[in-house]
Length: 389
Image (cartoon, rainbow, N blue to C red; front, top):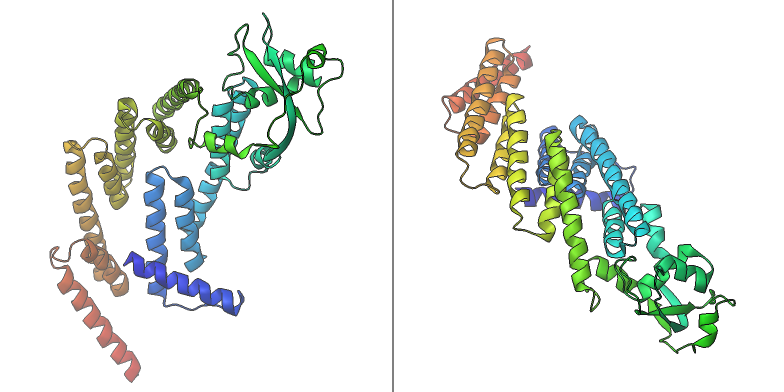
């Protein structure tokens, strides 16, 4: 069914593109409702799993079918705000890590910000200006006691803020990890000559290098596609430190009852360590608590879905199975009774709508098929009488 819906919407969108956006595409109201609800459920599923970008895409698809759907409009506005806030948080974390000289982690934060918001200008500019830089050569500097990368940047470039150039050229993931006697290559970049007053550069010959220094390799490393040789241990240590940060933040958010945000942080932990027992345990608790909240709000099917997700993290959860059954029973009972109330108040269309919801979950529930047919027969007779008048 979902596949047919996707194909149908694709055809509709193609028709709009070739005929012009001003031409309206008409669909039967029940078809519109079916399509939009299908995409809304897809969005909810992704949101429950912590994938806000995919969730937003689902809700936006619902709006392409039904631009007036209030639930989709509210969800889009809410998720756009959350995604932008999350991207800014990752960007600021990257800036903080970069200032500390933790370049591998900083790049990961910047890339995460861009994945969340591809139009995030500040994060994009960081990479856009660093793709390929022509290198004329380098000099070799032996680290002396008390020297730091910032001091070397002053010596060779006349600006302490250029210390990341030295760090990146030497594949240093931590600017503070220098040792006395360590030899560093100081690149001479076209358009940014080494300082004339630097005695070290005068003493040592400039060594010829390859024509270009490709910064895109750094981006590949930031995505975990190829850490530089010799730095794997440092990168692993940085990654473990960042995982601990994600884990601690997740626990803090959980204690503040911000379960959806906690899910996002714990999923980051699992992306690095799928067997992290703390993250797995808290993910179960997050989904279970969200499910209980939804159950108390009588949002039974959404609660059932959350209980089902929580089972992925604790498959022996008997309470989850118990509440999933209670959710389904409560949902059917609620709409069955509401249908009866509408029926007795002679609101037959609304009664049929309620019973159809029950039938969709359980076609054998009580007398739902009989009641739908009976209400429909009465409606048909009423319509015949109106037509005769």
